Amino acid sequence: MKIIVSIKQVPDTSGKVAVNPDGTLNRASMQTITNPDDMNALEAALKVKDATGCKVIVVTMGPAPAAGMLREALAMGADEAYLVSAREFGGSDTYATSQILAAAINTIGVEKDDVVMCGRQAIDGDTAQVGPQIAEKLHLPQVTYAADIQKDGDTITVKRMLEDGYMTIKVQTPCLITCIKELNEPRYMSVGGVFEAYSKPLTTFDYNSLKDDPLIDATTIGLKGSPTNIFKSFTPPQKGAGQMLEGADKATCEKLAGILVSKHII
Image (tube, rainbow, N blue to C red; front, side, top):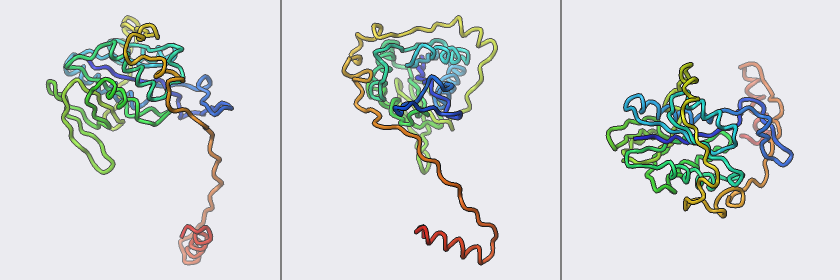
């Protein structure tokens, strides 16, 4: 059995977010991190590895520097890593990205007992589309928003978070699961893990490595193969300073009510 975890390098939005004049993110001027939800997916896979001894493989699509993120995943305990990187893949939207990642996972191979795990969504796009799209293209059953995962043989029981409660679903492997932050607390890299990370295999898939897969087509990958494009991106105007009223007497309440009426809030 193996678990393939799809992870993504994203801008660290906790710091200053830089935007180019054309409205796109200036990624070169921003620090990068591993997408938080993907860290929960990796931790879920590593917990299964701790219990069963299965193999954990991480895969990402991105530029060459994303290899550093993959080394961190290896230092946490993953066994193999794959970097999917090529100029032909640049500018891909979620549809094209899922095509490419599905082809990479196809090349790695998905067998009967295997599981594919992804984070719920990435903090740079917040679409939550890539994981489910990968499942559809690989013809795998999928369970999203996993808040708890229990594996028993070729069956996985997932506690799925909803807006107003939870749903328990049993699914057979192979399958795809997307994970949320409530699932677990990701572990840290160990000193020994950092040393071992550089002796573990890290393979790069370029365009030529994947071009024979049926999912790789010039019309469905990259910017030209992306059916959605950003028309405009901008920083919203800052809100003005709020008005503070002090006191809890009748006069203050009447003043507050008058302000709300004048603004047609009540």
